[in-house]
Image (cartoon, rainbow, N blue to C red; front, top):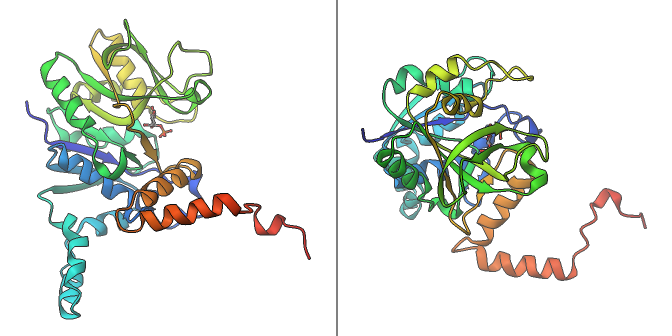
Length: 306
Ligand code: G1P
């Protein structure tokens, strides 16, 4: 069955980004010139997904507004002779269908995916986390590769994976390969945020999944973790324990995941995208070179007076 639908969870509060994410969705933070979630949508469109279901939550209406066709703004640009700016709104006219549902209680990523059950029905689907961009400027084809793997093999899930530092496994879902970990391989296990040294792997789930609708049974039977959250990782683990096959696909070399969910990686994402900007990148690279050469980066308030 061809896969057309992507579920994009965007319900998380963004507490790691306070105060910036207090009254605006973290998914709308600028990364270079676009809000983060626009790259996610463009990536999915390029990979052939035509229907997007956002699972939203409190304070997330800016995302819905962003993907609306804004006739008033278009008319304003025309009337004021700013036609050249219409190109910046081209994403509004992508041939995509948008759906929105709300996660009415904050019970974790697995629960957010479960909120999509009635819309997804009995078809396989993609999950793409709205706060994670893969590769620079939405050019990643990883979801297409994952869909092809899903359609060619008798599996119930395909997850994207990236290599992380051993001390960082505590922040991710970590895949345990069944045999060797080639570019595409079968998983023996998947463990959410293990302790350092608990798993013999540093391959982390990288925010993209292809799932069969069997995942919903597992999600319904997945108990909440210690923090009261239902984890998607635990439901995929349950699939494996039921004897279903799950594949991992590594991100291609040089392609990274940009996570806007915390300041450390958000800053890196913004810097990388701005430095690579076709129009402003060169001047910024020059500015950064100069600053790195001569700069004093001690925050102002820490500097000695006088
Ligand atoms: C979620 C998933 C985790 C995955 C990560 C990045 O964690 O639970 O398995 O590795 O996204 O895709 P979160 O960042 O929401 O804590």
